Image (tube, rainbow, N blue to C red; front, side, top):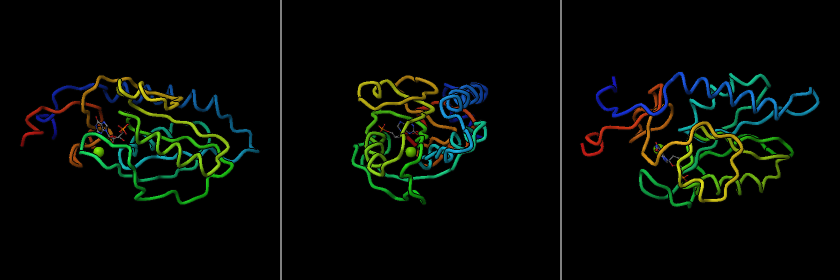
Amino acid sequence: MYQDDVASVLVTEQQISDKIAELAKQIAADHPSDGTKADLVLVGVLKGAVMFMTDLARALPVPVQLEFMAVTSYGSATSSSGVVRILKDLDRDIAGRDVLIVEDIIDSGLTLSWLLKNLASRQPASLEVCTLLRKPDAVKVDVPVRYVGFDIPNEFVVGYGLDYAERYRDLPYIGTLDPRVYSS
Ligand code: XMP
Ligand code: MG
């Protein structure tokens, strides 16, 4: 359906699922569930992280609690300013809990850095980040990201949760768009 709009496939469906299996193994090894600790809390950032979050949660061999946040960052459609507003907050308190933020993509890192500060102020026992994709600029800012799926070039990507004007989130892979799409 979207074939004509996609210029290139950056990460295939198979590569995504292999990577999720790998990340899940690492995360589970780092967060063993011993029956006494409360479950790990995954905090997914809507809407982009939805596909990644649900696939990751099902790949994890440890029980997790699913929470979602929706934030908006003031800026253009394709870049963020770091000024963030919460559209939907967590449903539950995370004080004393082990929390893993699940992100679709880190670009400038501004959104994530704001989110880390905000969630840290709620006194979780631990706070870490897992992102499916990371762009080169993200390396310049000092945000600690424990789990990274793929480092990708500095191009605008869509698919697997990521959108352009709310489209293409349902593509099963990560790709770039034909420039024609942006000009129409
Ligand atoms: P920052 O710059 O704050 O940006 O790290 C993170 C947010 O910006 C959006 N973003 C993208 N969305 N394709 C997208 O669909 C991209 O290539 C892209 N780069 C950044 C996204 O909302 C992300 O959470
Ligand atoms: Mg978007």
